[in-house]
Length: 202
Image (cartoon, rainbow, N blue to C red; front, side, top):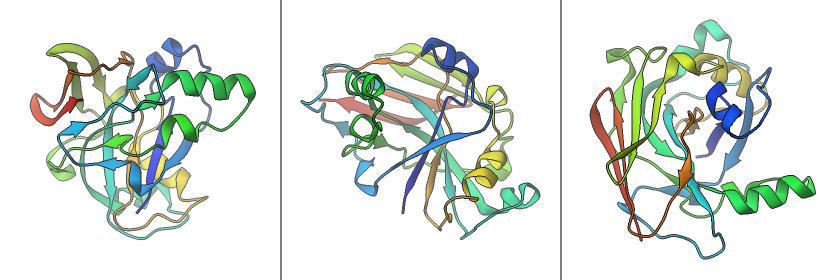
């Protein structure tokens, strides 16, 4: 199982990060040790500026390579919410040195995920609403129709380069509103008004 994360897939987030809008999908990988299904996340000591990035996550349920766009929808049936934790201070250091960002993105437990999966056939993934709260304060209000690249486009693009396998997870990018987390925070995520994710920072 691998975790495939998409960067800059919402224009408003790209702007808040002072980054150019991509002309094709940007992706990076996290190892399976980044996955966190527990209710508690322990703030790592190697960063002083850890940020949350809430995202719709797609679970791949068929093996596929070079998947045509018209067939991409056949390669997944469930989705949920996850968090792409980013050590922003380490990321900035990597950017300044022209280095890869794995140290800031791919550490243990950097990809918390809900255990509540929703059936894609019951929703319109191209027009889905999701919200993320930090200590009951709304921080991110996302709509999948604002994604630069749709879920199916992402699957088609990524599968040109790496084979998708059953159980792989696709983090589809985060909207604007990312911010720093602190010990004691309670992070919650909702899809179409239904809470699917809750995480305590310790």
